[in-house]
Amino acid sequence: MIQMAHILADQWLSERADNVGKIKDAIARMNDAPVQLDQASMIAALIQEGLTPVCVKCGRLSSQNMAVGDVRPGDEANWICRTCASDNSQYGHCRCCGENLLFSVDELDDQGLCQEHAGEFDLSPEEEEDWESYIENVQKGD
Ligand SMILES: [Zn+2]
Ligand SMILES: [Zn+2]
Image 1 (cartoon, rainbow, N blue to C red):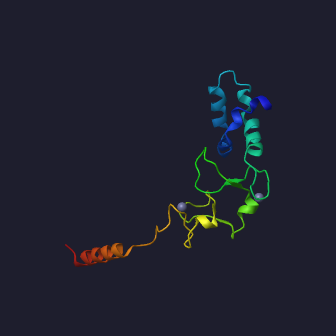
Image 2: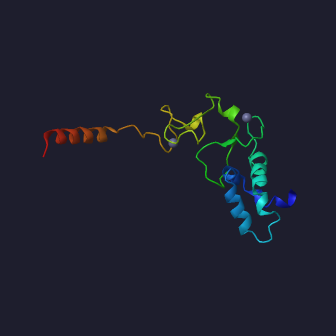
Image 3: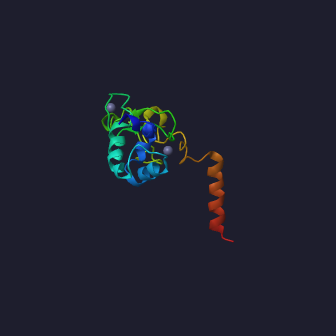
C-alpha cells in the first residue's frame, strides 16, 4: 500500500472517491501506475476509509467526516465526524448552502446564514424604499 501513497496524497480525493470512474481516469493518466485499473474500486474504498482526515474533536476516522466551512479542495480545513457535527450548539448548516456544507456556529449569523450569505434576506432601508416605489409604479400601471 505504501507505494500508492503518492496517488492518494490529496485528501480531497476522498470527496470524489465514490466515483470509481474518476479514480480509474486518474490511474489511466499516470505513467507506470503502481496499480491496475481493476483495482479502482478497492482504492476507492481505501481512500474513503483511510484518507479522510480524522475528526478534530474526537479523532474518529470515517469516510463520513466533513470539512468545516466553505473550503475548497486544497484548503486547510478542520474535519469533523457526523457524531460531533450533529451537536447543534457547535455546528450547523447555512440555509443557502444546504446540508453539504458544515459550519461552526460562530460562522453562522442569527439567521442561520454563512458569511457569504449573511444578509441575503435583509433589505437595506434604501432597498426597501426602492421596492415601495417599484410596487407603487406597478400598481399605477403604465
Ligand atoms: Zn468526532
Ligand atoms: Zn451559505
